[in-house]
Amino acid sequence: MVKYILSTTLVILSAVITVAQERPFVLEGSIPNSADKRKAVLIWNNGATAEEAPVVNGKFTLRGNLEAPGAATLMIQKEKQDSQSQEEMFQNMLSMFIDTGRILVTTKTTLLAADVTGSKPVKDMASYQRATASLKNIELELNKKYTQYRTENNDAAMAKILELYNQLTELYYLDQKAFVQKSPASPVSLHMVK
Image 1 (cartoon, rainbow, N blue to C red):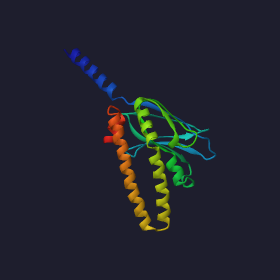
Image 2 (cartoon, rainbow, N blue to C red):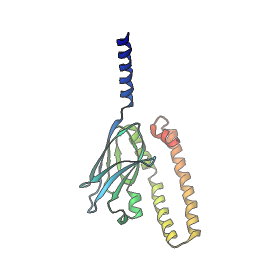
Image 3 (cartoon, rainbow, N blue to C red):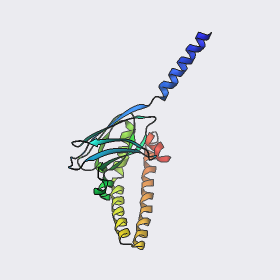
Image 4 (cartoon, one colour):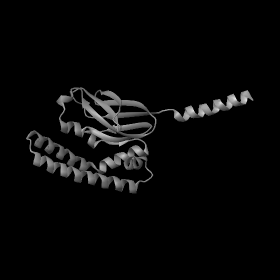
């Protein structure tokens, strides 16, 4: 009887450990070469930094383990961040869905124009990002104007830009809603309705 209880406990414990194991991912990137020292940084949408890796000859590899797939932001940063303009930072940020397995990010310009391959949810998020690229360009222009008006202490113009931001946020919401309606089974849709 003791052997039976012990072996049953071991089987259950083994199953629990197997289910609770983290699953690996590899995120490989290919970006334009630069004389500046840069690094790739992956930040989870909860604000935690997941991984960092140097960019060497335009290539980087980030490795990690997932408790569960989820949304994150990939950034390419100069080591001397003060030498990186706001526009350059914005163009080198990419919202992604990180899933197990291999994810490949390639671009000849900036991360905003990157091609992303991986699992179906990774591709779903990449598709959504491409669909909203024009909104991101508008957001970049609004950021530039807001920064200019803030430097000029032009409160009235800053208030107008904030109104435009609110309208832009509504457009993002409508695009997300359309994505969820088109792809309700995608894990990316679940992320969007949270």
